Structure formats: C-alpha cells, structure tokens
Image (cartoon, rainbow, N blue to C red; front, side, top):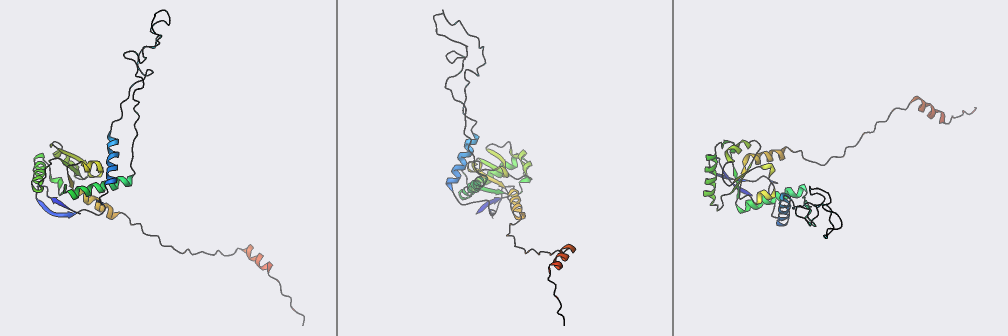
Length: 249
C-alpha cells in the first residue's frame, strides 16, 4: 500500500510504500472485537455502594428493645435509616476482557490498512526539525488543504528519536500525541487524520531486517569415538579365546 508523504514544511513528496508486515487485509470482525476490548478496558468500573457493615457509624443499639411502641432496631447503620447502608445495591464487580498479543498486533495492522484505504494515513519526513507550534500548524494546514480533508483532528505517532517534537505539538488544538510503539487498534481507528513519523517506520524496518532468520536446522551426523580397550578388558578377551592344541607328530 502506498501512502502520501510530506516534508516537515508541508510540501508533498513522492508516495512511499508501507513496510511489509505493518498493514494487513481487512478483517472487520477482528477489528470490532479489538475495539470492544479496548473500550471495556478504558471503562473506570461499575458504581458500588456500601452495605450496613461498611458504613462508618455507631453500632450502639439506638433504643431499648421493648416498651417504645416502635419496631425493634439495632444499629443506626440499617438500610431503613438515612445515612445507613444500601440494601441490594451495586457491588462494583467488573469483567475485564483481554485479547491475545497476536490478535492485538493483527488488529493494529488491519486498522492501519483501513486508514490507508480511506486516505487518512499520512507520513511526514524530518519531524525532528519541527521545533515550533507555528511550524506544526502550518504543516497540518498544508496537509488539510492538499488532501481536502473535512476533519481537522490529527493524531501524531512519533518515533522514540523525535519525541522532543512533543514540545511543539502539545499546545495545538485537536492534536493528539502518541509514540508509534504505543499505537493500538482503538487509537488508530478513532484517530481522525493519522500522521506517522517516517523515522518510526525506518526503525521498525531496521529492526525486522536485523532479526535472525529461523532456518531449519540441518541434521549433523555425530562421529562416535571408540575408546581404546583397557588392560583388564584385553586380558579378559584373551582369556576367553580357546587355546589350540598342537597335534603330536
């Protein structure tokens, strides 16, 4: 897949081909599953109320058992009283969903493929030279004008080397910042216009090229060394040999 490329000043350059292994074919079922898992993990949790045993109040019997004409009561923490515990309230139990690492990686590749197919994936070269907020704003304005985008919301995925550009980008409106290694399917799918640092793609390409290739191990015939026989073994072998008797002539 080819992606539009821009310089740090907003000039459009030749489209680049995304490295192999970063983009996968569309699989909406897996992408939907991954997004639901990330949404569930982001949820702070279900509300929870205190029971009568957890309310901080006196446990003294509020009045005597008999002779009042009222109902029998014990501590003030009973659910019937104001300030007491809640009967049958929510307990705050939350089911935490999870996704295997291979499925998370595959979902990220699918999300990047969807953004590339939509045309909302852009690569920028020399992000380290963007040192001022005004330069970054001019860059984004040039991208919007060239690509004729209707949205003005950006998500910038920086490399580890160029994370100093965070100082120039952090105060811009409608711009979210994230390291490329921390991208996930949810952040990519709802990123608006995804701007990727070209240095991050180079780092990933170099890492994959330097990875050792797992080749099939060739079978090697082991040479068995025969140990010389000891003196005792030699004597036993000689003793077992039958002795030939000479015939009398």
